[in-house]
Amino acid sequence: RCLAFRCPLHSFERAAVLTARGRLWNGTFLEEYLAVTSVELIVRASVSVTSSIKNLVLKDASTQIPVSIYLDPGAAVAGGVPWWVILLAVLAGVLVLALLVFILWK
Image (cartoon, rainbow, N blue to C red; front, top):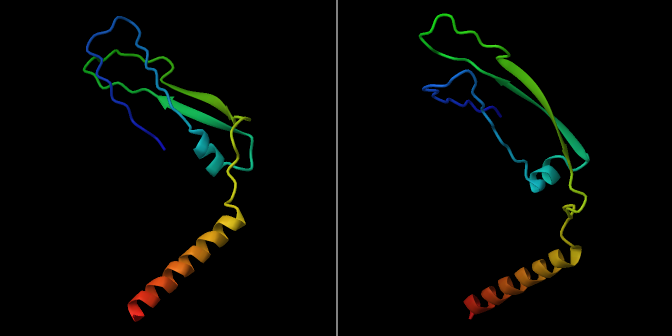
C-alpha cells in the first residue's frame, strides 16, 4: 500500500531530510508468509516540489531501497487448536442446548 506524504518546507538552506519508519508485526509475518523465513521489500520513493521558483532542480528525485525482513526464530509458530478443546466445546454446547430444551419443555 502506498502513502503520500506532504510536507510544507517553509524555509530550508540547501538540504532537507525526510525519514519514514514502518513496522511489520511478527504476527502479520506469521499469518501472511508462514512458509517462508524471509521477505524482501522494495521501497520506492520519489519527491516532487510545487513551487513558484522556476530554476529549482532536484537531484535524485526518486530512489529504490531494498529492505530484507527475517522471521524471528524465537517466535511461536501459529498452530491449530488441539482436537480435545474442540470436542470439549462441542460437548458443552450440546449439554447447554439439551438443558435449555428441557427447561423450556417443562
